Length: 80
Image 1 (cartoon, rainbow, N blue to C red):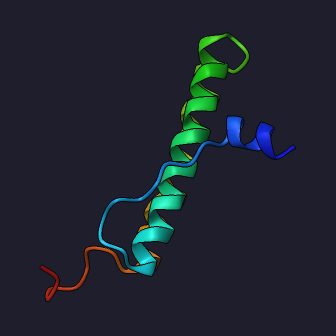
Image 2 (cartoon, rainbow, N blue to C red):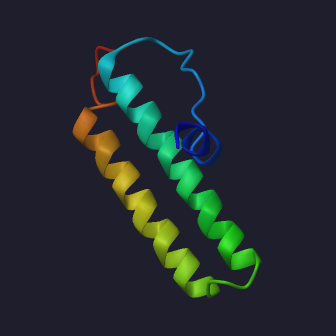
Image 3 (cartoon, rainbow, N blue to C red):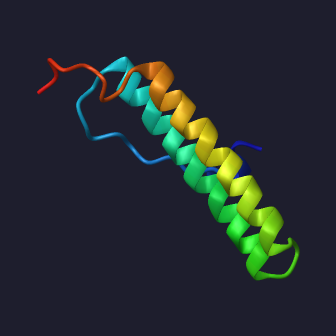
């Protein structure tokens, strides 16, 4: 079971500034990319309508934006 999950949901190591909010956002970003890839593949193979694919990816992007805002990334004027 673990091997199947590793194959279907690969994770890359994080190489940026190690802060909890950065790690969480990176995990969210990787999940977004994986789900968007699945949706694109379904649409490309005719298993999903283009409009449905667009709406699902748009909803995923909205969730990603909300997570960025909730984590407070890029909002502090004192960040370098």
